[in-house]
Length: 80
Image 1 (cartoon, rainbow, N blue to C red):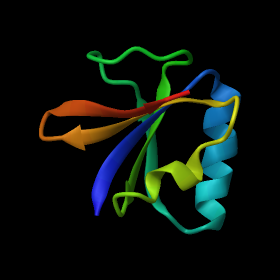
Image 2: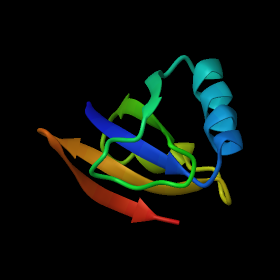
Image 3: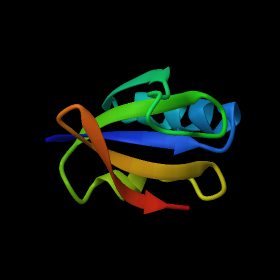
């Protein structure tokens, strides 16, 4: 399992994704965006999932980017 960080265009996207993840009983948390990254709404979702499964949680029009957490840094996986 790897940890991924999702950025969103707005807080609405965070809430929509949170509800989706809760219903799937996924291992996640809502957090402030790290200072080293920039995002639209100031909140992000950190999610643990197997590599390759991270894109199933993307909401078109809501998700801004996905980063894989690598040590103390982040590696961009996708941008929307």
